[in-house]
Image: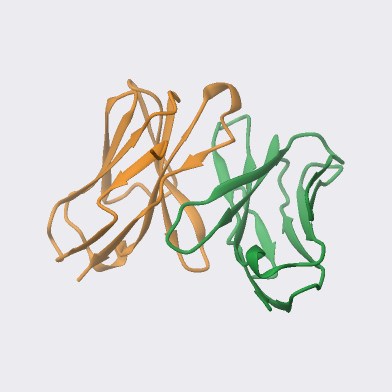
Length: 113
Length: 111
């Protein structure tokens, strides 16, 4: 089984809808991250969490919120989806001792129409 | 704001050719990672370099961290179609505990 899983893998939704993307990990890592990927822009950090009680905004957090339900679970919500949030979304994890070595899930392709 | 510039953005070569991808910044990083991503999958970590001037080899791939820890390069010798994918560099900052990613280099190796 994969160490980092994301659900759903694909989602099409309409403008204004609320949507939640979920991430689970079995690596036992304390740190979790949400990124979005757009062509030609690399990966941009949305939110990150160093432990269950430590959640921080990344460079593009507007329009998004997160919840760290447990060490192994980190969800990303779009409160009111808009078309420019159409992108690939990735969850990643890392161990605090080797924080820069991040392990990514398979991604969620989100389309907002 | 820390930025990482990757070049080239696109590279299409024939099997057997050599290539180099560059990752440059005006900022100093505590570490530099290279990831490879295939369509429909998440990035997979290839290597981490942490010491200025460090060179690491992974089969036909050679990674180098600049002496000043501001830049890095990835060299592939005798590229194969299986090397096709998106290569991403990422710099780690001890100040922020976060990674900054370059835009990526899309490599296509034709048989």
